[in-house]
Image 1 (cartoon, helix red, strand yellow):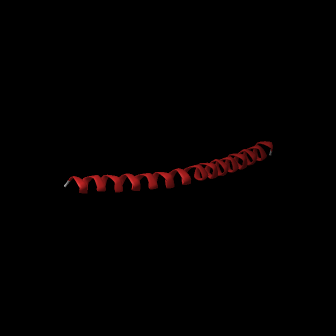
Image 2 (cartoon, rainbow, N blue to C red):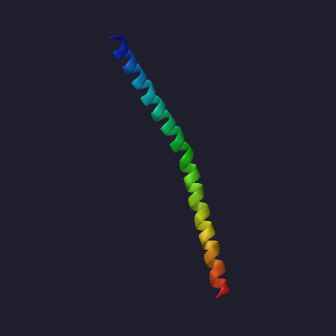
Image 3 (cartoon, rainbow, N blue to C red):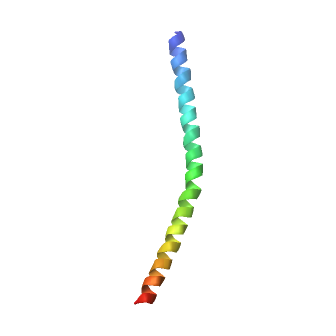
Length: 55
């Protein structure tokens, strides 16, 4: 019985920790992703402008 309770508690702790870490990772990656997309778009526009001015 003790091992069952222990395994349940450890599973619960691992689950909560995983969800918490996942939330933190998502909160961290969403701004990074948006910044990356903006930077990529800016670079793309810059490259296209340079390329079209060279022709």
